[in-house]
Image (tube, rainbow, N blue to C red; front, side, top):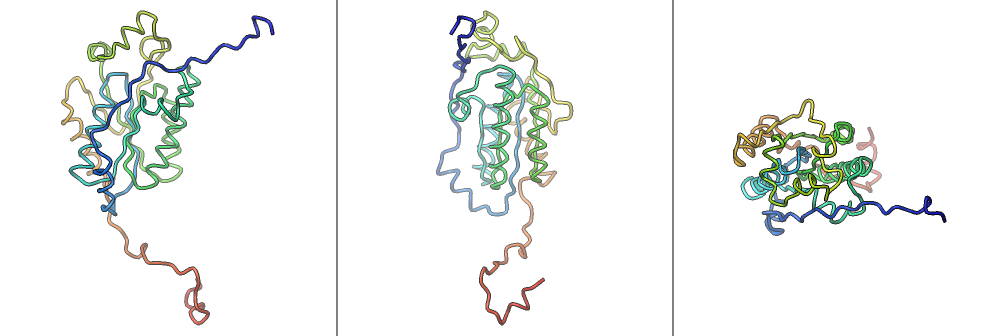
Length: 240
């Protein structure tokens, strides 16, 4: 094999930190008594340090502890520790990252969980494909644009990622080396440089309540049990 044919190792993410949720496992399990909740995906997109993780975890905590609604947050850094640990930050890997988590979010929401997905997801086309996957299965998809100016994000950067990106220690960093494509028509837009965490959470709750997304009345007829095996005397009555 010549030097030109040598395989270049794929860049794997190293600048990620596991984010700990505010909701304990037993607290989450206790919410499944709420049987008329409806599943949906709430998709948080925005620059690194814009506030996606902070707001999604605060919303999760409110829904679980205050409203007793089964909720789970899928965080970008957490997912890259496991499911997407083999992906880097090239445009192709970013697209695959969002494709995978879009499918996982759809499955969570289809199980009647409120799925909070917190990902930079910089490309409009990738986010649109995730929306279409949900629409195809008639699952509500709410895009939340966590908007903050780049200079604000850099000031909030306690992990020093922007500094490392500007110095060349991190490649393919969104807003420094690669483009972030802003959502065109998000269901919710939150300017985190102007509102507190609680105010942002309240704005999301208001939208969900106004659009009856969290809970809907159950049609009791839908819950009537169906028999797999029937007596031949009743067969004619069950035919449609």
